[in-house]
Image (cartoon, rainbow, N blue to C red; front, side, top):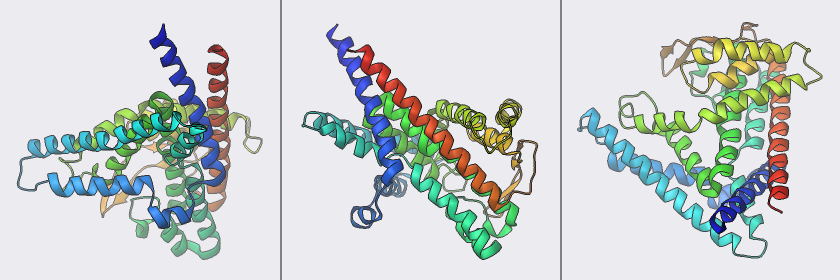
Length: 338
């Protein structure tokens, strides 16, 4: 019974830390002054990934050898990130008010506020500076070729990034914080960062980054589906949207999500497209290469800055539902263990 009780106590602590981390990050984000002085955990992970890439990714090796080296790099990365996070969490819980420190550490793995700010800058840039300013702003959040985007393409790119990153940067780290505490959240963030850095189909990383890309697909499976459901719930509760928005989001999700080239991105993107009456995804250019993808939704291609702001309002409502859901689970766990 002792082990069972200890396990239940850890679930309770993880839930409480997750909801506190969400609230802290939503309210204050990650201060710029801290970033300038000591960096950000994602920057530290990125430096480690770069070191592993330079040390283990040998161009002269066969594709299978490079796949194996890439898998080893991801394993080393996870261990070097998750083990210190586990030790830190246990050490903080041994201190008075250490739970606050755990929540603060967990908040660095979530990006609600920064995601909103980056996407809002694209809408502001389109309104104030036109297409050139919109292209410059959106280039900070998407990897596609900005010079090939018209104003509607800039707006769609921003909305797609918002939808996908709601899953990757908000829902998924929260999910893994609940499942595995700081170690789980940090390991997820390391995998996701590795995918963004080496999980590309380029000559250098197609083989070496294969393990990072496949593992990222796997760890994002639950969050992408949950994110889509949260977006549909937000559409149902949004006074600014028509009563049919949630039904349209659900229809787009069922029809289009599985057609996306990513096993995960299509879920929040399709739900968002349906809710806003837009058509997202479709053909895009990355590094001069045209990537054909199925469209998500059956609405307008001609998105605008107004649509970006509607997507941001939908995102805020979905995020609020997420926080409320985690808080309810934390309260339930607290009551069940008393």
